[in-house]
Length: 137
Image (cartoon, rainbow, N blue to C red; front, side, top):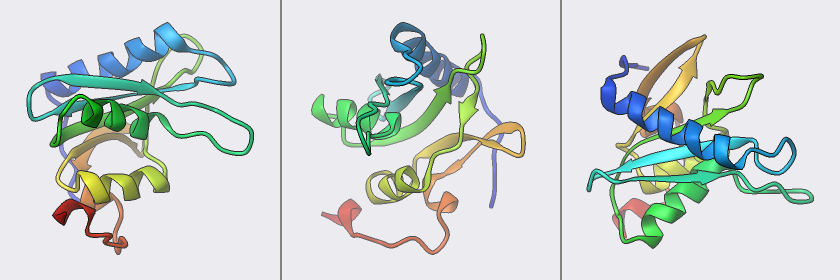
């Protein structure tokens, strides 16, 4: 997998994810924040929503906020969590990786790779992914 170093735009996206989590953190209900950068240049954020048995991750909430506001092209995404007084970057779970392959396969995903924060294309984070065809509709 080819990983790339972060740039200033990536740092801005990480900070947006951290800020939404700072404002909404709850140790049980809201422990992850996410931010997406769209082709328009706008950033949309979201937090995870815990519920009995299942709750959506922060990434689909942020993607849904972008789509709700008329965006159709996700350029980059990042998720963070709270650890003490810091907000480190998280790697997306398998469900979120599949969601990204379905809706934004070319988007850059900022993630933790062996202790280093890097980015790679969404499609490269899920080898052998099931292809739903959602990105063709």
